[in-house]
Image (cartoon, rainbow, N blue to C red; front, side):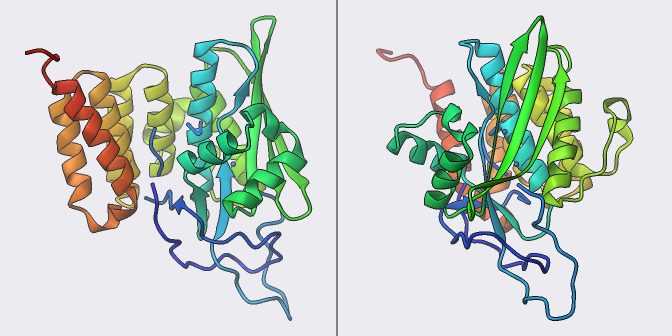
Length: 297
């Protein structure tokens, strides 16, 4: 997903780093197939006499959470939380999030894995290459049947940790963990994300919360719930056009390529979703491959 920054000014206040636009997307529109690991305290300062003029949109690089064990289920959970945290951060006006593919490219070029982002100095170095102001990364560790999710936010300028959040949970409650962790990380970032209990989410008027649940459901192999939650998200907040990407992915996971293509055509025809064009094209290609006759026929 690539687009130029919207130019919406950030709130007044000191701003570490000077990340340029780079290759990024605005998640007030989302990514494509978590991330899935988030930005920062000290990013929001109240207006004061003599304060500097508003800065351009801030840039965050959000990584999937690192899992040391070779457990496909936990790795998928790390991807999911990275995506959810990116969506949560994007609720802050003027926030842009570096495209996940660009992050993966830089890590590959530097011969680094997600575990390297646990070190603040390394995370800041990667963030500088991405033109980001902050890098959000973390880990998932399992012990005694329990999971510990730990996320930290690193300022590229100064290579310092601005804040951290930890949540304990199990494999059976990823939705609750995603909501709690996202709320805590968003608070560090200065994003406006109201704390919500999973049992209250059905009645929430906040579209972004439904999108976050939809992404979690997709990664939990529950495409029906993913579709329902993402539809609710875009109904409540039409700006969340990335929700349609997840609807298309969920339809594709159900083997319904025709429905997935219908969502993608809707996105392709929407000028407000232009920043999603790269992901729309990639998913359209997946749909074509899914419906292509076997070779040799």
